[in-house]
Image (cartoon, rainbow, N blue to C red; front, top):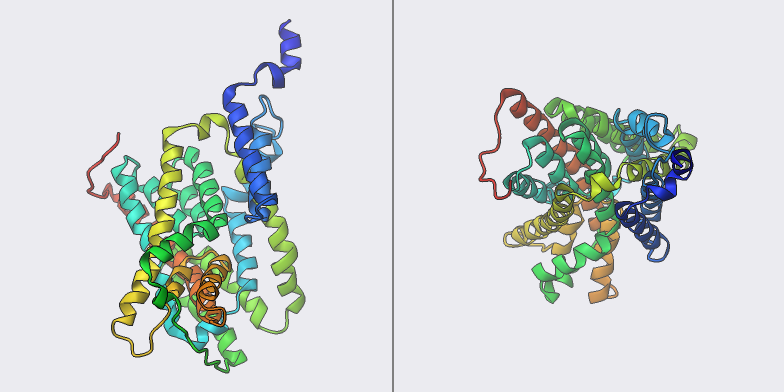
Length: 386
Protein backbone atom coordinates (compact mmCIF):
# COMPACT_ATOMS: atom_id res chain seq x y z
CA UNK A 1 0.00 0.00 0.00
CA UNK A 2 2.87 2.39 0.76
CA UNK A 3 4.28 1.84 -2.72
CA UNK A 4 0.86 2.49 -4.21
CA UNK A 5 0.51 5.69 -2.15
CA UNK A 6 3.93 6.83 -3.38
CA UNK A 7 2.88 6.13 -6.96
CA UNK A 8 -0.17 8.36 -6.59
CA UNK A 9 1.56 10.94 -4.35
CA UNK A 10 0.14 13.81 -6.38
CA UNK A 11 -3.36 12.79 -5.32
CA UNK A 12 -2.88 11.25 -1.88
CA UNK A 13 -0.72 14.11 -0.56
CA UNK A 14 -2.86 16.92 -1.93
CA UNK A 15 -4.02 19.33 0.79
CA UNK A 16 -6.07 22.50 1.09
CA UNK A 17 -2.97 24.66 0.88
CA UNK A 18 -2.13 23.20 -2.53
CA UNK A 19 -5.69 23.74 -3.72
CA UNK A 20 -5.65 27.35 -2.50
CA UNK A 21 -2.44 27.99 -4.46
CA UNK A 22 -4.00 26.41 -7.55
CA UNK A 23 -6.84 28.91 -7.18
CA UNK A 24 -4.36 31.80 -6.91
CA UNK A 25 -2.47 30.60 -9.97
CA UNK A 26 -5.70 30.24 -11.96
CA UNK A 27 -6.79 33.72 -10.84
CA UNK A 28 -3.57 35.22 -12.22
CA UNK A 29 -4.01 33.32 -15.50
CA UNK A 30 -7.62 34.56 -15.70
CA UNK A 31 -6.50 38.15 -15.09
CA UNK A 32 -3.85 37.79 -17.80
CA UNK A 33 -6.21 36.35 -20.43
CA UNK A 34 -9.61 37.81 -19.61
CA UNK A 35 -8.58 41.25 -18.30
CA UNK A 36 -5.26 41.44 -20.21
CA UNK A 37 -3.40 42.65 -17.11
CA UNK A 38 0.24 42.27 -18.18
CA UNK A 39 -0.27 38.76 -19.67
CA UNK A 40 3.46 38.34 -20.37
CA UNK A 41 4.01 38.42 -16.60
CA UNK A 42 0.88 37.16 -14.89
CA UNK A 43 0.26 34.14 -17.12
CA UNK A 44 3.69 32.51 -16.59
CA UNK A 45 3.65 33.46 -12.88
CA UNK A 46 0.23 31.83 -12.47
CA UNK A 47 1.30 28.69 -14.32
CA UNK A 48 4.52 28.49 -12.31
CA UNK A 49 2.49 28.62 -9.07
CA UNK A 50 0.39 25.68 -10.27
CA UNK A 51 3.44 23.64 -11.32
CA UNK A 52 5.19 24.15 -7.97
CA UNK A 53 2.23 23.14 -5.79
CA UNK A 54 1.69 19.59 -6.94
CA UNK A 55 2.93 17.29 -4.14
CA UNK A 56 6.23 15.77 -5.27
CA UNK A 57 6.37 18.00 -8.37
CA UNK A 58 9.48 17.27 -10.45
CA UNK A 59 9.45 20.86 -11.73
CA UNK A 60 10.87 22.09 -8.42
CA UNK A 61 13.25 20.71 -5.83
CA UNK A 62 16.79 19.43 -6.06
CA UNK A 63 16.59 18.34 -9.71
CA UNK A 64 13.71 20.58 -10.79
CA UNK A 65 14.22 22.71 -13.88
CA UNK A 66 12.42 25.68 -12.30
CA UNK A 67 14.64 25.50 -9.22
CA UNK A 68 17.65 25.43 -11.53
CA UNK A 69 16.33 28.54 -13.30
CA UNK A 70 15.82 30.19 -9.91
CA UNK A 71 19.40 29.52 -8.86
CA UNK A 72 20.97 30.41 -12.20
CA UNK A 73 18.64 33.11 -13.48
CA UNK A 74 17.34 35.06 -10.48
CA UNK A 75 19.62 34.42 -7.50
CA UNK A 76 22.63 35.43 -9.62
CA UNK A 77 20.56 38.38 -11.01
CA UNK A 78 20.97 37.31 -14.64
CA UNK A 79 17.30 37.67 -15.60
CA UNK A 80 16.85 41.15 -14.04
CA UNK A 81 19.96 42.38 -15.85
CA UNK A 82 18.79 41.01 -19.21
CA UNK A 83 15.34 42.53 -18.67
CA UNK A 84 16.96 45.92 -18.12
CA UNK A 85 18.87 45.64 -21.40
CA UNK A 86 15.51 45.10 -23.12
CA UNK A 87 13.81 47.98 -21.28
CA UNK A 88 16.66 50.32 -22.15
CA UNK A 89 16.38 49.38 -25.82
CA UNK A 90 12.66 50.22 -25.72
CA UNK A 91 13.09 53.64 -24.13
CA UNK A 92 13.16 56.91 -26.00
CA UNK A 93 14.70 59.56 -23.76
CA UNK A 94 13.85 62.28 -26.28
CA UNK A 95 10.89 63.69 -24.30
CA UNK A 96 13.04 63.82 -21.15
CA UNK A 97 15.94 65.48 -22.97
CA UNK A 98 13.47 68.03 -24.39
CA UNK A 99 12.49 69.02 -20.84
CA UNK A 100 15.17 67.82 -18.40
CA UNK A 101 13.27 69.16 -15.37
CA UNK A 102 10.99 66.12 -15.67
CA UNK A 103 13.72 64.08 -13.99
CA UNK A 104 12.67 65.64 -10.66
CA UNK A 105 9.18 64.12 -10.95
CA UNK A 106 10.69 60.68 -11.46
CA UNK A 107 12.64 60.98 -8.23
CA UNK A 108 9.74 62.52 -6.27
CA UNK A 109 7.62 59.47 -7.08
CA UNK A 110 10.01 57.24 -5.10
CA UNK A 111 8.61 58.67 -1.86
CA UNK A 112 6.64 55.50 -1.16
CA UNK A 113 9.81 53.44 -0.86
CA UNK A 114 10.92 55.33 2.27
CA UNK A 115 7.43 55.34 3.84
CA UNK A 116 6.99 51.61 3.28
CA UNK A 117 10.45 50.83 4.64
CA UNK A 118 9.56 52.52 7.92
CA UNK A 119 6.16 50.78 8.08
CA UNK A 120 7.79 47.41 7.40
CA UNK A 121 10.23 47.98 10.26
CA UNK A 122 7.35 48.93 12.55
CA UNK A 123 5.65 45.65 11.61
CA UNK A 124 8.68 43.68 12.74
CA UNK A 125 10.66 43.07 9.54
CA UNK A 126 14.41 43.49 9.79
CA UNK A 127 16.15 46.31 7.92
CA UNK A 128 17.12 44.17 4.91
CA UNK A 129 13.61 42.81 4.41
CA UNK A 130 12.08 46.26 4.97
CA UNK A 131 14.33 47.77 2.28
CA UNK A 132 13.32 45.07 -0.19
CA UNK A 133 9.62 45.45 0.62
CA UNK A 134 9.83 49.21 0.19
CA UNK A 135 11.23 48.78 -3.32
CA UNK A 136 7.95 47.17 -4.40
CA UNK A 137 6.49 50.67 -4.61
CA UNK A 138 8.91 51.72 -7.34
CA UNK A 139 7.00 49.41 -9.72
CA UNK A 140 10.40 48.09 -10.74
CA UNK A 141 10.33 44.29 -10.66
CA UNK A 142 14.03 43.70 -11.48
CA UNK A 143 15.14 46.18 -8.78
CA UNK A 144 12.85 44.48 -6.25
CA UNK A 145 14.43 41.12 -7.15
CA UNK A 146 17.98 42.44 -6.74
CA UNK A 147 17.35 44.12 -3.37
CA UNK A 148 15.36 41.14 -2.03
CA UNK A 149 18.02 38.72 -3.25
CA UNK A 150 20.79 40.63 -1.47
CA UNK A 151 19.08 41.73 1.74
CA UNK A 152 15.88 39.80 2.47
CA UNK A 153 15.64 36.29 3.92
CA UNK A 154 15.47 33.65 1.12
CA UNK A 155 11.87 32.74 1.94
CA UNK A 156 10.73 36.32 1.22
CA UNK A 157 12.26 36.57 -2.29
CA UNK A 158 9.29 34.82 -3.92
CA UNK A 159 6.51 36.78 -2.17
CA UNK A 160 8.24 40.14 -2.69
CA UNK A 161 8.81 39.45 -6.38
CA UNK A 162 5.31 38.12 -7.07
CA UNK A 163 3.72 41.05 -5.25
CA UNK A 164 5.91 43.55 -7.13
CA UNK A 165 5.01 42.18 -10.54
CA UNK A 166 1.34 41.65 -9.67
CA UNK A 167 0.92 45.26 -8.57
CA UNK A 168 2.75 46.43 -11.70
CA UNK A 169 0.01 44.73 -13.68
CA UNK A 170 -2.64 46.49 -11.58
CA UNK A 171 -1.31 50.02 -12.17
CA UNK A 172 -4.42 50.94 -14.25
CA UNK A 173 -6.59 50.04 -11.24
CA UNK A 174 -4.44 51.46 -8.42
CA UNK A 175 -3.33 54.83 -9.75
CA UNK A 176 -6.57 56.52 -11.01
CA UNK A 177 -8.37 56.58 -7.60
CA UNK A 178 -5.28 58.02 -5.90
CA UNK A 179 -4.83 60.66 -8.59
CA UNK A 180 -8.50 61.70 -8.46
CA UNK A 181 -8.39 61.92 -4.67
CA UNK A 182 -5.45 64.35 -4.79
CA UNK A 183 -6.43 66.51 -7.77
CA UNK A 184 -9.39 68.63 -8.79
CA UNK A 185 -11.16 68.40 -12.12
CA UNK A 186 -9.64 71.75 -13.11
CA UNK A 187 -6.12 70.46 -12.35
CA UNK A 188 -6.70 67.31 -14.38
CA UNK A 189 -7.73 69.48 -17.33
CA UNK A 190 -4.54 71.58 -17.35
CA UNK A 191 -3.02 71.63 -20.82
CA UNK A 192 0.70 71.39 -21.39
CA UNK A 193 1.61 72.51 -24.93
CA UNK A 194 4.45 70.39 -26.21
CA UNK A 195 7.38 72.25 -27.68
CA UNK A 196 9.45 69.68 -29.48
CA UNK A 197 13.19 70.10 -29.26
CA UNK A 198 15.63 68.87 -31.84
CA UNK A 199 17.70 66.39 -29.86
CA UNK A 200 20.91 65.60 -31.70
CA UNK A 201 22.18 62.09 -32.17
CA UNK A 202 25.30 63.00 -30.22
CA UNK A 203 23.18 64.03 -27.23
CA UNK A 204 21.19 60.79 -27.39
CA UNK A 205 24.42 58.77 -27.41
CA UNK A 206 26.15 60.75 -24.67
CA UNK A 207 23.14 60.70 -22.33
CA UNK A 208 23.17 56.96 -21.39
CA UNK A 209 26.93 57.02 -20.98
CA UNK A 210 26.81 60.10 -18.75
CA UNK A 211 23.95 58.72 -16.63
CA UNK A 212 25.89 55.48 -16.12
CA UNK A 213 29.04 57.31 -15.01
CA UNK A 214 27.22 59.62 -12.58
CA UNK A 215 24.98 56.89 -11.12
CA UNK A 216 27.80 54.39 -10.67
CA UNK A 217 30.09 56.95 -9.05
CA UNK A 218 27.40 57.89 -6.52
CA UNK A 219 25.94 54.40 -6.03
CA UNK A 220 28.20 51.60 -7.32
CA UNK A 221 25.72 49.00 -6.06
CA UNK A 222 23.30 49.96 -8.83
CA UNK A 223 25.98 49.55 -11.52
CA UNK A 224 24.66 46.28 -12.96
CA UNK A 225 21.07 47.48 -13.38
CA UNK A 226 21.57 51.14 -14.33
CA UNK A 227 24.50 50.08 -16.52
CA UNK A 228 22.49 47.47 -18.42
CA UNK A 229 19.51 49.84 -18.72
CA UNK A 230 21.70 52.51 -20.27
CA UNK A 231 23.58 49.94 -22.36
CA UNK A 232 20.27 48.85 -23.89
CA UNK A 233 19.46 52.48 -24.67
CA UNK A 234 22.90 53.01 -26.18
CA UNK A 235 22.29 50.04 -28.49
CA UNK A 236 19.08 51.75 -29.58
CA UNK A 237 20.55 55.22 -30.10
CA UNK A 238 23.97 54.47 -31.57
CA UNK A 239 22.47 53.82 -35.02
CA UNK A 240 24.82 50.98 -35.97
CA UNK A 241 23.21 48.08 -34.06
CA UNK A 242 19.64 48.21 -35.32
CA UNK A 243 19.26 44.42 -35.53
CA UNK A 244 20.51 43.98 -31.97
CA UNK A 245 18.25 46.78 -30.77
CA UNK A 246 15.18 45.11 -32.28
CA UNK A 247 16.25 41.73 -30.91
CA UNK A 248 16.63 43.21 -27.42
CA UNK A 249 13.20 44.86 -27.64
CA UNK A 250 11.44 41.75 -28.91
CA UNK A 251 13.03 38.30 -28.74
CA UNK A 252 15.21 38.90 -25.67
CA UNK A 253 12.46 40.73 -23.76
CA UNK A 254 9.82 38.10 -24.55
CA UNK A 255 11.98 35.07 -23.74
CA UNK A 256 13.46 36.41 -20.49
CA UNK A 257 10.08 37.71 -19.28
CA UNK A 258 8.49 34.29 -19.79
CA UNK A 259 11.32 32.48 -17.99
CA UNK A 260 11.38 35.09 -15.23
CA UNK A 261 7.62 34.84 -14.70
CA UNK A 262 7.34 31.06 -14.51
CA UNK A 263 10.45 30.87 -12.28
CA UNK A 264 9.07 33.47 -9.86
CA UNK A 265 5.74 31.64 -9.75
CA UNK A 266 7.49 28.39 -8.89
CA UNK A 267 8.74 29.88 -5.61
CA UNK A 268 5.19 30.43 -4.37
CA UNK A 269 4.44 27.16 -2.62
CA UNK A 270 1.66 26.90 -0.04
CA UNK A 271 4.00 26.74 2.95
CA UNK A 272 5.73 29.97 1.83
CA UNK A 273 2.67 31.90 0.69
CA UNK A 274 0.15 31.10 3.42
CA UNK A 275 2.02 33.05 6.07
CA UNK A 276 1.57 36.27 8.05
CA UNK A 277 4.65 37.81 6.42
CA UNK A 278 3.30 37.26 2.91
CA UNK A 279 -0.04 38.83 3.76
CA UNK A 280 1.77 41.84 5.25
CA UNK A 281 3.95 42.12 2.12
CA UNK A 282 0.81 42.19 -0.05
CA UNK A 283 -0.63 44.98 2.11
CA UNK A 284 2.60 46.99 2.19
CA UNK A 285 3.09 46.60 -1.55
CA UNK A 286 -0.25 48.33 -2.06
CA UNK A 287 0.72 51.04 0.44
CA UNK A 288 4.02 51.57 -1.39
CA UNK A 289 2.27 52.02 -4.74
CA UNK A 290 -0.22 54.46 -3.25
CA UNK A 291 2.46 56.61 -1.60
CA UNK A 292 4.68 56.58 -4.69
CA UNK A 293 1.77 57.78 -6.81
CA UNK A 294 0.81 60.37 -4.20
CA UNK A 295 4.41 61.58 -3.86
CA UNK A 296 4.67 62.34 -7.57
CA UNK A 297 1.29 64.11 -7.72
CA UNK A 298 1.93 66.19 -4.60
CA UNK A 299 5.35 67.24 -5.87
CA UNK A 300 3.74 68.45 -9.11
CA UNK A 301 1.15 70.41 -7.12
CA UNK A 302 3.95 71.94 -5.04
CA UNK A 303 5.78 73.02 -8.21
CA UNK A 304 2.57 74.69 -9.42
CA UNK A 305 2.60 76.97 -6.38
CA UNK A 306 5.65 78.74 -7.81
CA UNK A 307 5.65 78.01 -11.54
CA UNK A 308 4.30 80.52 -14.02
CA UNK A 309 3.59 77.76 -16.52
CA UNK A 310 1.46 75.24 -14.64
CA UNK A 311 1.94 71.51 -15.08
CA UNK A 312 -0.80 68.94 -15.05
CA UNK A 313 -0.19 67.32 -11.64
CA UNK A 314 -1.21 63.91 -12.99
CA UNK A 315 2.16 63.61 -14.75
CA UNK A 316 3.75 63.22 -11.32
CA UNK A 317 2.00 59.87 -10.95
CA UNK A 318 3.88 58.60 -14.01
CA UNK A 319 7.10 58.87 -12.01
CA UNK A 320 6.88 55.23 -10.98
CA UNK A 321 8.92 53.00 -13.26
CA UNK A 322 6.06 50.92 -14.68
CA UNK A 323 6.96 51.83 -18.25
CA UNK A 324 4.94 52.61 -20.32
CA UNK A 325 1.81 51.60 -18.39
CA UNK A 326 1.77 54.55 -16.02
CA UNK A 327 2.29 57.09 -18.83
CA UNK A 328 -0.67 55.59 -20.71
CA UNK A 329 -2.86 55.68 -17.59
CA UNK A 330 -2.13 59.39 -17.07
CA UNK A 331 -2.80 60.23 -20.72
CA UNK A 332 -6.11 58.33 -20.65
CA UNK A 333 -7.22 60.18 -17.53
CA UNK A 334 -6.35 63.52 -19.18
CA UNK A 335 -8.41 62.64 -22.24
CA UNK A 336 -11.31 61.45 -20.10
CA UNK A 337 -11.47 64.99 -18.70
CA UNK A 338 -10.71 66.73 -22.01
CA UNK A 339 -10.59 64.59 -25.19
CA UNK A 340 -8.26 67.05 -26.93
CA UNK A 341 -5.72 67.28 -24.09
CA UNK A 342 -2.44 65.56 -25.02
CA UNK A 343 0.09 65.33 -22.19
CA UNK A 344 1.66 62.04 -23.28
CA UNK A 345 5.12 63.50 -24.08
CA UNK A 346 5.35 64.81 -20.51
CA UNK A 347 4.00 61.65 -18.89
CA UNK A 348 6.46 59.56 -20.92
CA UNK A 349 9.33 61.85 -19.90
CA UNK A 350 8.31 61.43 -16.26
CA UNK A 351 7.90 57.68 -16.72
CA UNK A 352 11.41 57.14 -18.10
CA UNK A 353 12.71 59.43 -15.34
CA UNK A 354 11.03 57.13 -12.86
CA UNK A 355 12.89 54.18 -14.34
CA UNK A 356 16.19 55.95 -13.72
CA UNK A 357 15.02 57.21 -10.32
CA UNK A 358 13.89 53.80 -9.08
CA UNK A 359 17.22 52.17 -9.89
CA UNK A 360 19.22 55.08 -8.45
CA UNK A 361 17.19 55.36 -5.24
CA UNK A 362 17.04 51.57 -4.89
CA UNK A 363 20.81 51.37 -5.33
CA UNK A 364 21.45 54.08 -2.73
CA UNK A 365 19.12 52.42 -0.21
CA UNK A 366 20.71 49.06 -0.92
CA UNK A 367 24.15 50.53 -0.20
CA UNK A 368 22.98 52.33 2.96
CA UNK A 369 21.09 49.29 4.29
CA UNK A 370 24.06 47.00 3.57
CA UNK A 371 26.39 49.37 5.43
CA UNK A 372 24.01 49.72 8.39
CA UNK A 373 23.58 45.96 8.68
CA UNK A 374 27.36 45.42 8.52
CA UNK A 375 27.86 48.03 11.26
CA UNK A 376 25.07 46.63 13.40
CA UNK A 377 22.87 49.71 13.07
CA UNK A 378 19.13 49.65 12.45
CA UNK A 379 16.20 51.99 11.98
CA UNK A 380 15.10 53.22 15.44
CA UNK A 381 11.34 52.74 15.03
CA UNK A 382 8.77 51.24 17.41
CA UNK A 383 7.73 47.73 16.46
CA UNK A 384 3.93 47.39 16.29
CA UNK A 385 3.73 43.67 15.57
CA UNK A 386 6.05 40.92 16.73
